[in-house]
Image 1 (cartoon, one colour):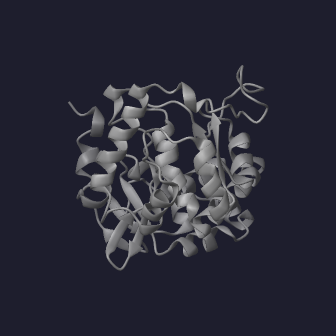
Image 2 (tube, rainbow, N blue to C red):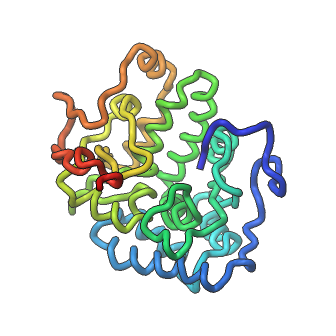
Length: 290
């Protein structure tokens, strides 16, 4: 939920930290119905596809109920489990604000929900993406620590001018990460678990590469912001992801400054390859194909 290019302060009605009241009572039944439709569709699809920490988080927070969850309710359990809370924001927030919230175990979530004719694709993240997609993983202590560490690292990356490298780490883990398990690959990234189509594409389609996670490799790889991914990175465990981020990134950023980007479709000799994709979807033009 971060973005650069903002003015000097929050929009009218928002607090200094860009938070707003969720105003849960104002949601219409039609808006609750959109949540229920999206939730039930994913509930039928995700068993056997989503990682256990995500599925356990869904159960722990009881995100179904009668529609859009009330942040005040889910924050009680989330705070008890890992010390995190969800805060409502009016939309995308500046990078420094986003990182400060994460570093203090607050997850900024959009307040609005998509329209009934936007179930399958939405350009700006809504409450379903932010809460259904992201928040269940925050019930896992290891992932919760990773997100806090990412927020702390983000503030440093801003000062060193390496935010674009760190953003790739977030994209390929928090948003579009895969987890290796004894039962096969599982999805945990919010951008996948909240998307009906990408929940299938990420695991089943022959087009994308699926490669073993390597921190510096990920930070040198661009990503697709408006379509299915051309590459997914697979972590062996949540603990290994956390461990990779608890090191000093200073030397890594120094190497990044002298390194070139790796083409998004590339498979390198040193990559651990789960799937060497055909790249057929991207080559046909993706969503822009006629």
